[in-house]
Image (cartoon, rainbow, N blue to C red; front, side, top):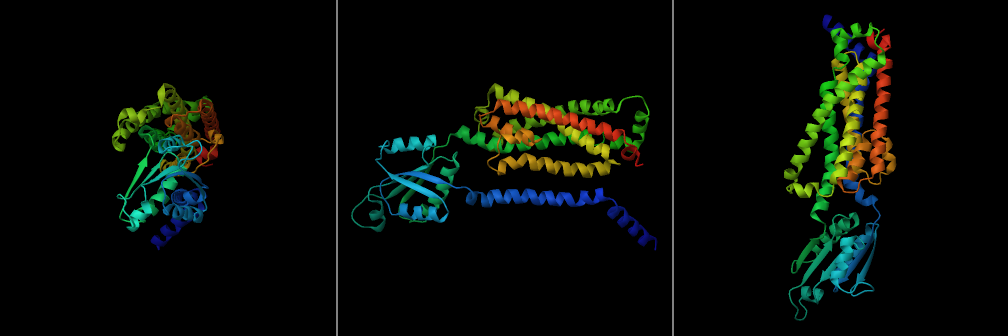
Length: 383
C-alpha cells in the first residue's frame, strides 16, 4: 500500500505541475522541428528552387536534348547556346562567363561525339567535359543533373567534370555554415557551466534569503550576478572560439591561410563585438531560468530546453535560404547570420552593429525580469 501511495504521490506531483509537464514535452516538439527543417533542406530544397540555366555548348551531341528534357521534368528551364555565339566566340570566353556567374556551365564535346560512340565512321576517342562553378547553386544543381545523365550515357567515352570554384571561396562557404553554429553552442556551454546554479543553487542552500532581506536593490542583485558571470563566461567562450578556429583548417584539410582568407581585420573586430554581446545575453537568459526554478535540477531541465531553442536559432540560417536583414532583430539568429556574412568576406557593418546593440538591449530586459522575479515571494519562496 505504501508503494501505491508513493506512486500516486509522484504521479500527482508530475501531472499537477504544468512546468514539469512542459519540460518533458517541449524538447520532443523542438527536436521534431529541427529534424523537419533539416530534412526539408536536404531532400526538398532542390525542388523548391526555381532555376533558369544558361549553358554554353561546344560541339554537338544528342545528349543535350536528353539533359534539356530532364531539366523540364524537374520544373526548371534551360537555354543551350552553341559556340560560337554573339559575344562569346570561344570555349575560354564561355568558361570566363561560368567563373563570373553569368552562365551556368560549359559542355564540351569532341568532334563527331555521337558518331564515335555509335562506331560510325572514323573518329578519335570520344570525350565530354562539364565545366561548372560549385559556388553557384544553379551551376551546382545543373552539374549534378547533367553529370548523372552523362555518366550513364555510355561507357565508351571519357567524361570529366571541372569545378572552377576558388578553393578559398569553398573553404569560406563551409566555415560560414559550420563555424557560427559551433561558436554559439560552445558559448552556451561555457555560460551554462557557470550560470546554472546562480540563483537556484542559492535557493537550495538558503543563502539567497539572507541577501534579499538586506537593503540592496533587486536590480543591483540581478546585475551583481549577470555581470561577473558574463566576464567568466566570456573567458570560456573565447577559449572555445579559438579552439574551433584553430582546429578547423586541420579538420577540413586546408591551410590556415586559405581558411581565414578574406575575413580581414574588420571582420575579426565585428566577430569580437558580436561575441561580447551574445555572452551576457545567454548568461542573463540562463540566470532568468535559474531564478524561476526552485532547484538546480529543475533549472537544468529548463536550461536544456533553452539550449535546444538556441541551437534551432543557430542552425536555421544554414538550412533556410532567403533570410533577410530582419534577422538582426532575432536574438542569437542575428549573431549567426552576421557572422556568416563576415566569414564569406561580405560583412554588412550596420547589421553587425545593430545586432550588437539589440543583444545588449535584450540583456537589459532579462536583468529587469530577474529583478522582478527576485521581488516576488511566490517565485523566491513558493508563496
